[in-house]
Length: 100
Ligand SMILES: [Ca+2]
Ligand SMILES: [Ca+2]
Image (cartoon, rainbow, N blue to C red):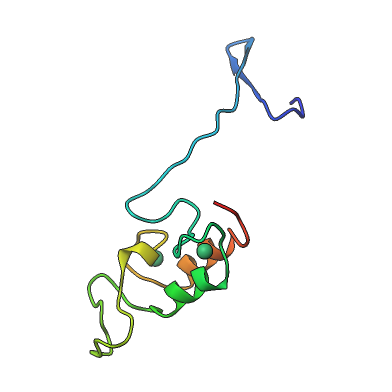
C-alpha cells in the first residue's frame, strides 16, 4: 500500500486505484466532533456535560427525580444507545483537543 494516504482496491486480478475524500458525518443532533459547547474545540467542558448526565437513560431520563439536576439529553448520548455512560464519555475523550 502506498504511504500517500490512498489505497488500492482489487477487482479480480486488476488493482483499482481509489482516492480518499474528506467528509463530515452528523448523526442526529450530536455535534460531529463532540464539541457540545460549540467553542471550536473538544475540552473538559465537553466531557463534563455528558458526565453530569451519568447513567441517565432514554427510558428513565431523570432517575433522581430532581428537575434541577441534568437529565438524559440525546445530544450527549454519543453512541446513541439510550444510555449516557462511560462509552459516551470515552467517545468524547477520543476527540480530546480536536478543533472543529
Ligand atoms: Ca468545546
Ligand atoms: Ca450512550
